[in-house]
Image (cartoon, rainbow, N blue to C red; front, side):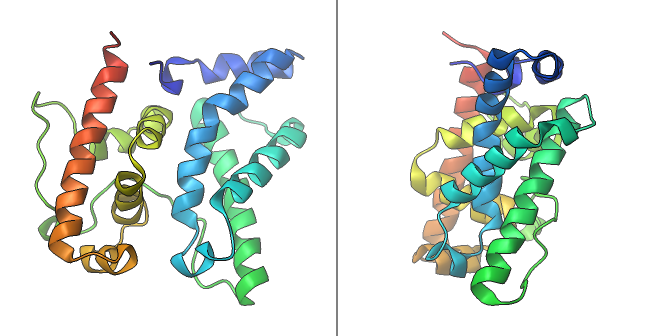
Length: 206
């Protein structure tokens, strides 16, 4: 298994701008999981019945592909930030289209950072290394963590997106998932543990 973070995004950007179509296609492939995870975090629960996150992803990547000449940055962080801006703009359009007004700020930064230390089930990686939450805070690892989250079972992805990316308290996560708070906390603990395993496998492929 090869994580997208093992790909030099800056190099792909340079080649794509030079007319290398293969590099251009590869650039969008390696960023798809990142855009998908962020899109799922941006869509509020009430909007999910009306909008498929994959539609938002497809529209964002299509607009980025068509408007790539407008991107002025050179680094991976700048590129991901540009993609996030396009996605946030599209998400805001969906909100206005289906609800009339924008109910929340869709341009906020997302991270796997706990919002309330007392509300988090303790998780310590067995090897003493950084936790998945800490890893996502390191900008250069955003693609790697997004790829890892995308490999989790669906219910694990959901609890990580709700708890960590949308930064919802466990009570609200439980309500949205239709489970009890203790069940959701246990699910989240297992999801984070599995995420760590996937990350470790990516760093040490067999």
